[in-house]
Length: 294
Image (cartoon, rainbow, N blue to C red):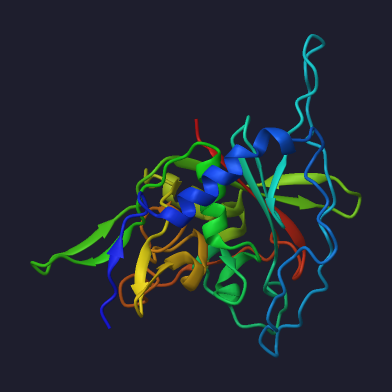
């Protein structure tokens, strides 16, 4: 069956949800840190493969942003508005934050080496190829990015033109920063560049340093996925394929990555794996933040 694709500018259900969410922001804002998630707030996850025991979820603890204000300025604390369980925004600072967890036993010596294809995926999709999984729907994350004032571009693609020419097209859209917040046993929270958790299998070089040494641009963009006609029904493709924040180019990610890397081993040799010395333990609860790159 041929899949028909169209841009998201006219996607009514995403735009409507973003407008409804934005309309209620002022009444819901708080000046505390990230709100505690109610027990049972995380979406129910399907059982993982037999070799991967399911972690016991713990609701994320509320944390206050570290700040070092001047004597003349009050402390700057994010005013979080919860849009849905596990998803919130700070409209003033233009930040989207959602809950996640480490879905794979990267540190287990007996586990085979896993080549990474995504930074963040939705549950029950690409957990064994991703650093973080989330129960928040990708289309809801798209709506949250619209609510902080971003406009989606389009995903990158790898393929052939009608003339038979092979092309790699990077994602378009506003550039964004992606960070993962991890809390240690003492309660201290650190904000990590997830690319610090991705290294080359041959020599252990971190991905960002690898490409910057070659003068290649490393960036994420709010690409916005696509809508596709599946059996007569338009669906948000990232909700189906599961890629929220990409590493490789699938043509359906909410947030696309540059440079353009193919998940097809016949096009690009697999070479990016998790840094087992840096990535948190299996099941660790984390928060992912996306903010505008200004």
